[in-house]
Image (cartoon, rainbow, N blue to C red; front, side, top):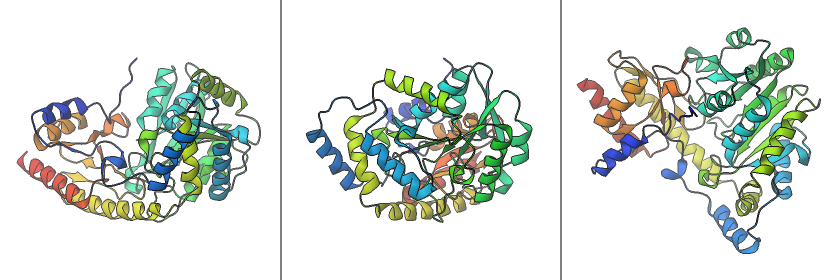
Length: 388
């Protein structure tokens, strides 16, 4: 198949170390629940009630109507867009959303513009369905903001759409309203659809998030979002697709997505019921989550830049940071990752896995652990680099 995951590919080596009794500090995967973040109690209790009260059978293929209506209300309040219930479908995480939309929209040879670096699932699925992933440059010297001129240069007759991930995985960048408006206008100029991945939308450190769906009402926009990150329940595997399509340009893609969802039957039924509490219940835990992430982002930014041989830009959202390997002692970022893992016992994700053009020579780290654990990791890393 040729599919791979830079986030999980090195786990086999980490497990071999752990089998020998070695403690590995895993900073490779964006799972808050592996650290000191917990699924809110009222949402867990809602799931327990749902299991007891619902029939535990399949849900509708497109998802529970009540949950979809709650998502419509959320999108109206946050992004100021009006959706019909037929515009929203529930998926098994955003990963299934990516797979379904790419399968429904990409024919062999079609191109999709992707952020470089960006979440690798997009490029993997575009290639899997015989399309061509085309990375557009994000400018590291400008806090990893998209390079709009580079994006324009890469639009061809085969380009179908543009993907925006904001806040960005793997860099932690958050895009300005001006930048997103320019991207939306570019899509409109060339008759392209936009995919906007907003899974980290409520995890920005200044509390500000803009969506392209708000900024260009005539451009067809496919919104990916879900509950894994903001609501701290990644293992529940629930996401959604929202089609904002005033001109009806996305009908064929929407139809293709629905055919796939009917084949796979349904997303988790009790979890969908519980998600109503995530949308309608208390959200005070989000402020505490963001306070901890902001504190850890500042600490990680400071410590990485203090280590000789590394440099990094400051993350503005999500829980990722994307340092540059300044030293030339390693042939590749993958060699660096493996050397650090085997000798310093810290697991990162190689930057080339997030883009073979613009991610090379970097690595992704999460800053989800407590300051104490991060301190131990940075001390190990600094000692290791000094010894090389």
